Image (tube, rainbow, N blue to C red; front, side):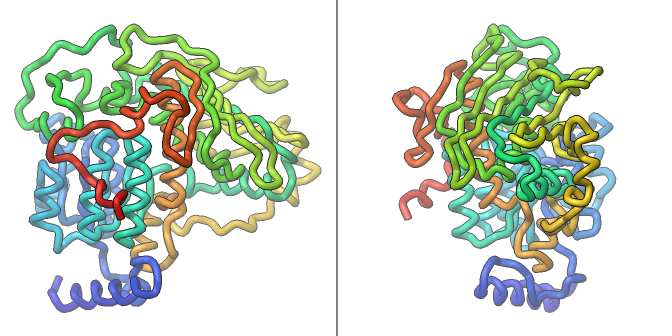
Length: 454
């Protein structure tokens, strides 16, 4: 690629940013976007695949073991000319002038640092769900997105899909009536995906760090611990230092539809109804049932959002002879009840299904715009090109959704009902939660403090 076309591409982007978001309205839409992928093994493979039509200019991962399958080394073999890095900061320093967008698919505890470093370098960002590991980080990401004027998106795919639009359209058409009660559930963390099969009773014994693993960089901002295969590469989600448990894993998917449809905002209280506590507080509880309590919003009444995980379930709806699936949502309205199977809304239906027949014409109306790409990274690329103003789950939306999830994570982690003071970013009358709202970080991993003093 010659220097002159690239300079023209970036110049038109800069001119476009003067009139609004930093999008490439005037740029040649055929120009490939230069992409760097941070975290390319396992979940990160999806970001690599979504970038096939663009120009991948850098890979970054901390685990370069040749493990086959979806490991970073195996993915990199398919792209032998793409430079490999272990530290995203070095990647941005050495390749920054060649990067337009950074796609971040690392574990939860390093989302924030990678995203902040990329945005400070004026790069557009995709960040896997949940956006960050604590609420201070979430709010700082929102401040950064506004300051640096970059395009953003979170990896909750369901927000791009048809199903979530149908839920919102049916509600806004008055089909459901008033909604005061929603039930969402997941099989995590009992499920085999990303969690240990046996719940730990103590910190795992240290093991030698494998060759081609940078354990210091993998830990990132978190206090140093000994390496264990119980963390890396696949089982970090249940450890509170690194992941956000079952709710952190699936909440940005399953709570997306009620959050968007019911304009929820922040809960006043998160109530712990039932919990099977684990034997070790450093790892998530095996089973939890919590309720998010929301005040009335405009003409909409107060609402309770029930969250179940680890095999706990709400009551099945009448006529469900096979019971409930492993993941799903029930939205109970004063007129109709909506049911959706799966962690993301794909095929919502009124229950019982026969209730749909008399109003099928209303259910078929589609007043909301549909996703231009059908998945978050495609929407990010479209926003960068100026085809759309921003992705659907851009940070103005995704940060509050992640904050909602994070309040529930604190309740599950503590086993205590909490009252959330969103205005002051505090758990009422419980200063012990402050260390979870804004977690301490190791030297060299501090980002965003300046944004709070502006």
